[in-house]
Length: 123
Image (tube, rainbow, N blue to C red; front, side, top):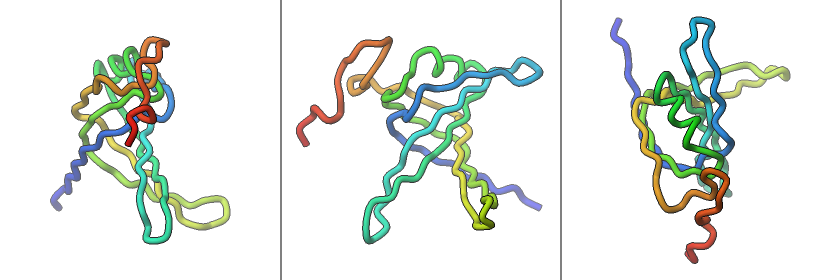
């Protein structure tokens, strides 16, 4: 049986402050999410992409990034299907980070200071 590999690259604004935790063995893992807007033919929908960053990458993101930080990232993409309490199916989208780059210039917050906002761009 061959394994399938799905790779995804995305650039977006971090929706909430990254959360750093540690596995029982002490490995650092940081989690955060990025909204992805999608036009379904009638109106906009927002899908949430959950990001999981392991090791030093996760620690770096937790130290430097905050809600509103613009980040470019790539990694392995996994949709997880689950059953809701009402019996309907839901999907959670997750990207396990492989590479990232914090983007300069349009962060809404960094180190507690306002340095610019995408709404101020005028387009």
